[in-house]
Length: 146
Image (cartoon, rainbow, N blue to C red; front, side, top):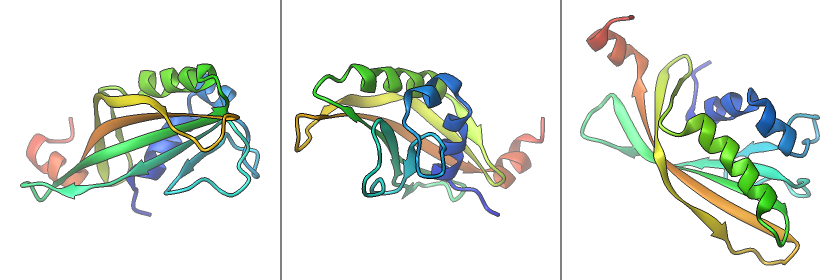
């Protein structure tokens, strides 16, 4: 199975005990880290939602784009959301993660802050990293396996 940025990032974050202890459980009993445009209806807070957009670059072997992390907790305080934010940043800031086909290079945190919500009982914190992904086959051909 070919890897993708969202699944690989989710798997990486699921290995972080402190982060997963701060999140609610999903319907399967796993820490509530969702990928895609929306969390499931009725998702229990706190949860983390990860989205990624990629754009072509001048190099065929690389794509680049923003990866956003939206933390939703009970509000109005953002205290818990900021704890979750700290764990995400400590794991991904300036890091490289990989799957079967790609290397994903996370830049330093590009943007972050509280985001508006429709209700005072929900706090929303948004973080954005720029992520470049590289095809492993190209990197190995150019740099070797070492």
